[in-house]
Length: 359
Ligand SMILES: [Zn+2]
Image (cartoon, protein in one colour):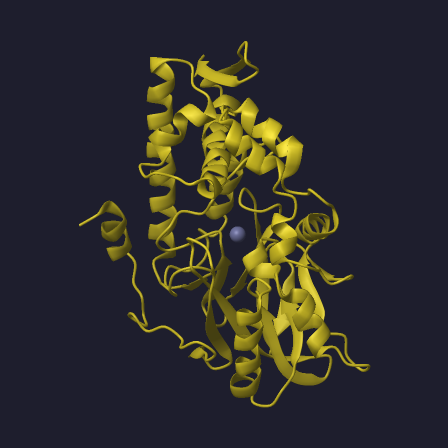
């Protein structure tokens, strides 16, 4: 059995292998529905949630996360509107963070469900709202020359790869063509009342600027977004906008913020299946990163390493360019934790590449 499968066996999936059929939902608790949509990426699906709501005197639903904007996902939403809302409207759209699979269709959902009497509002953290606006309104927001220079400084020297990154001008806008022009702000610790129940916002860092998970004590449910996933480890990357970030330290500190939650909490992750075993999973993620950091340290003891040198240490499979960009960001995040933690120092070599060596 693979290590991943073995770790997964320590978690419990109360619904077994059952998945919501396309265009339909699975009810997890009265008024809490699980939806699933396909994504055209290596990570091939996302989970979304519908919460029965009563908001400003109106009966309806709160949507949590939206999927990317493409005709297939709009069509699935249409089916869900027809079959899963009991004839009621969507009253608000909560988005855990600004990544395209979560926010892509927020603009369409908010517009579709706003009426002269009621504005269907996007609810999201301020940092993620503004980053999403930036991503879809600024040409070259997450690509272009600056990103190519950044990857080069971390050891990506293949001219073809660099050229492709220079020309990647509208990656975000292709998946998120618009973001609602206004929003309601989610803040760490804030209580949202959804359908008469209190949901507490728990901020997390290291994966997105300011990710919001939602915990409902009464229902024993945590909507964990991408912060705690049952099968894969969350992408934790350092990118060119904040090049000295210590994203991995932020992430590991953030998942510890879920530790006070009850052991039997049902976790609703954005990818994978609802599970219990939150504390086991948090420990597994700590163990995973501790082992990776030890491997990176061992490599740095052999010779000073760039983030690119560390890729085969962290990722034991071949990577295409798209995967390499994510992987390189992760690789920098591991090196930076060791650098900020005082175990590695860094220096630019004659080629302008950051090399990390033991202190
Ligand atoms: Zn994400």
